[in-house]
Length: 416
Ligand code: HEC
Image (cartoon, rainbow, N blue to C red; front, side, top):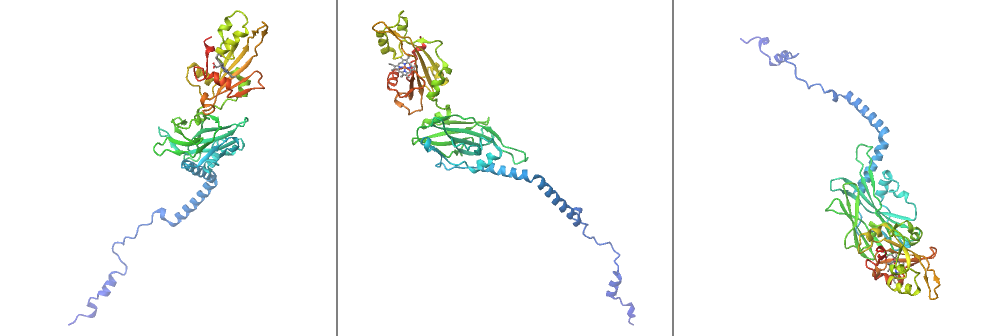
């Protein structure tokens, strides 16, 4: 007999009965999201960030922008390149001087942070033409990273001469952070400026790829080439020197002070170093004659001692000349000034009347190479009255001084 229907196991109903409300272990749901993923929290965070950014912007945007600009221009200066054949400054005398405009990167950088004399805005004086002959990052031997600029300045002086000068400027760059970090300027001294009577061209300076502390500035004088070497030292100075074999005249620009003007010397020569303790007799033989020198004596002495015979002289020299004289150096440096002040002692003429020889001032100034190359490049001057000065390559002076022992300087007064 078949079992009653109700006894036949029914898989469906059994299943249904087994699981209407599961009673087994609870299923493992995904863990609750961490607190920082919760939607509410994110909203708060976003709002907080917005407020912070807005407040930060309000408080910091000006200094941030200024600093970003500074760092940007600094970067441009550090990477500034000039074409090696571009002429940055040139002169053919006062009327024909020219200089390229300052690089915009330098103007912006300098205007934001450097001394006003270095920023071009302050150079509105038409007597100055300034530009930059070199601008790039350099690293000193000890590893100091700096931005080096060399200002190249063409100046018109009152005497209508032109001076070309180079001034290195070293900048310790600002750091990107903190915002208050500022570049530090080590303003170079003028190494010197010199009058230019010849055509000069200065070309864009080049960093040396093989030596991080070194750069070069090429130039020509009278179309003869020359090179200025620049080296960044560990003490934040740049040394400029003229490479041996270069066209000579720029050496003077780099190492010497401006050329002496004869009118200034005539006015101020007594302030120079006095090389004679007292007035000395130029011709001891004449001085030894215990009487006034006669006309014949003077004429005779003139042959051996020059037109300065029978006069007492005081010799003055500027520091450059005095140094060369004391060192017995065979050549006097450009810019040397030697002045001889003569006091006439008078003599008896044929009729035994006293003839007073006039006082006078004679001098010689060492000019740049090329001034009078065959005669030591000395310019002579002579006056009895400072308002009427004779100067130049005065033939009588030139000829007689050509026979002097050391670079056209006799110096025999020093032995007296
Ligand atoms: C005939 C030769 C002769 C002529 C010309 C002559 N000098 Fe001299 N000069 C001398 C002698 C010699 C001395 C050194 C003795 C003395 O001090 O007088 C001298 C000295 C000087 C000195 C001092 C430096 C030195 O060489 O010892 C000056 C400066 C000077 N002369 C300027 C002139 C000027 C400027 C003229 C032209 C206006 C001139 N001389 C023309 C012979 C000459």
